[in-house]
Amino acid sequence: MADTSRRDIKIFGIPFEEAFPDLEDAEVEWQGLDVEGPPLTGEVKRMRYKAGIFLGVIPCDNPSCQGGGFEVERVMDRMFRTGDAERAGIIVCPGWEGDEKPCVRSISYRIKLVYKSKVQRRDPLTDA
Ligand SMILES: [Zn+2]
Image (cartoon, rainbow, N blue to C red; front, side):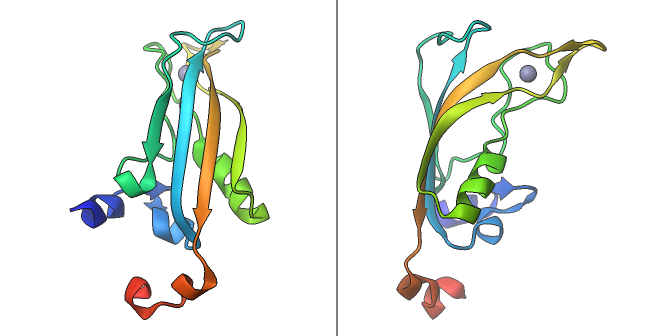
């Protein structure tokens, strides 16, 4: 069931609804960028919390990358704190290729957050 799979969606290592209790839904679109900036493939990828597919950290697609990944959860956290519904930008991978060489992959992203209304937030059925 969708609700069961959503329980497995972790943000900062905790369930999504605990990390962002006021969010109804979240949607992220992204595409990988080449080193100079233009899109690598032009393929836009998407994930959506309500669809049961969501990652706090999008895996880096560089096979040599270690410890990398695109931390959309950090951007979402900043948006959540300021109440922003939409943000677009670029995230650079913080990973490394070997000992000295940083991973240079990046993505362009667009994040949309849907906040729960106050009425829904106090609904005992959804709080249970
Ligand atoms: Zn990387």
